[in-house]
Length: 461
Image (cartoon, rainbow, N blue to C red; front, top):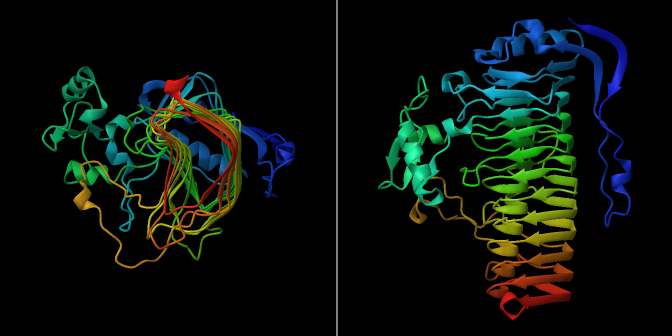
């Protein structure tokens, strides 16, 4: 049954207080508004029994709301099996606490009919929309084990046996497993497991959108990236949880790609790749925005991830006016990670990171690297192409890091530029303490200024 009310609902709180006392002026987000009109998914024939495919019910509900001018699609308690969902303007999905949207293992449902498509459709997508939201306390599960390859060196012997019992195929002399033609899967959508791996989709991927709200829900087990807005404006991410196995291939948590005016607060992350990651690809002349600008990240927790806060590896259109503060990283591979390479690089500016606490960091607490190479599953060093033309040179500069307390890391600060180029300069680290295991600093072809920084080897304590 549809409730139709004339008023407009302002779902998000007023975040203005978050923007006081910042070290650089950051353009603030504005609350996202939705019409106060609600329908239930069950009104459209859906059953939350974990068996009934609800794709058509979702589509009819979204179309019905859109025709009425938008509103809230209520997802009650249950397990709602579905194929990919496409959101429309002024639509809010709201999940009850015991509601789970579970994406079907049938890969054919995700095939993109566009002849230009190189990947399958994202589990949840939107293109060119205004005012879209996912809120509540429920779970959105991408069922990513149906898509992700597994590296033998990242699982125990018993886990490896479990994967092999599912079926699949082994490659690289038994060091790599692909989910291919195994139990519970109807058809594969590529000629080989290697080709299908390259088609993996994101859990939530929206582009060219304005006014995005993600609040309270859990995103888990993505086939690839979990939360991935790009070329979009006014993005609010508040109180979400992102989780997947620590060894999930390319299991990035939150990737902000070429977005302006972004707020990320109270997020909890435990993932298989980068945690809070800023990316910027090639310039797109028809996109509403390019590059990453006016981003505020506060009060977030990152457990396992390749990096707690990350810029790169692509930052071609640049990063400007980004503030990260009052966050904690516990058990990440690296803490603050800045990575790029020739062909992937751009220029940073007005980046301020402060009051970060870290424990049990596997490698570097802070790292700048300018020779990053993407190595997909099954690739070797010889497969990584070297740039022929020196263009899109990375330049990490105007980055200010203060108030870091780190207990436990292999190397406190590592910064490696490119000989003959000013790729890492204008970096200052102040008022911080690092307890390290092996190296205090490793600096090469880079300029880093330290002020009131204490480096203490763990063995002396």
